[in-house]
Amino acid sequence: MLGDHPLGRPIGGTPEAIRAVPRDSVLAHYRRYYTPAELVVTAAGGLDHDVVCRLVQEALASAGWALEEGALPVPRRAATEVPVRGATGVHVIRRAVEQSNILIGCPSLTATDERRFAMSVLNAVLGGGMSSRLFQEVREKRGLVYSTYSFSAAYADAGYFGMYAGCSPAKTGQVIDLLGAELDRLAAGGIDAEELRKAIGQLSGGLVMALEDSSSRMSRLGRSELVSGEFVDMDASLDRIRSVTAEEVQSLAQELAAAPRTTVVVGPFDSDADFAR
Image (cartoon, rainbow, N blue to C red; front, side):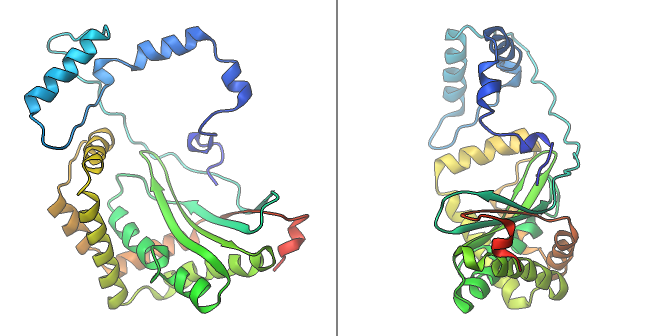
């Protein structure tokens, strides 16, 4: 789905590319980017700010980093959206596994898009848990899958939305149609007041519970600094979630439903005709 966008590259690289990297290139990369001006340090817990700063400075100094007085951080990178032009249609990866794994995706929002809160609500309604539409329709009502859900990921310059289901190979075509139909139904009919209330409650509770963990708080601080430079506290985050309307969710669903879709199926197929619809 991501095509030739940098996010579409293998995370670990390829064996050939890794073997071809010379030592000098690794060292040059380290010297260029691993500097105080590029560094963001976050901490959470029962800490003293001045003590943390002193410990960080001591650790960096002992590693030989130059800590010039008055040095300024590098400017935050510009978040210019980059178009995603992946391959649409159905793509089959043949693998000797027991079930068929289906992923349907399309380009979506960037990390700073104001509609990201509407996306959270949409995702909760469509495939965010046992009460979601995908779970209820495809698993509970029809008994076609063991697991099904929707998801989204947002980055500085691109994002994607997707739906997943795992089913028996013989049911692959039917499940692909159902996943697409549920997104289309959401786009055409929107959500009702009860679905909106439940989704907002689920998201609000999850946000509060997640921040009981110090690691989550620390990661949230770092992400705010790196991505947008704006820290949104708990109360403001909850307000933004609660302010999402059913109309905003439907509008976003219509945009996703109209976007080019990429379907990838991983399973024990001899040919595409094995799950022809």
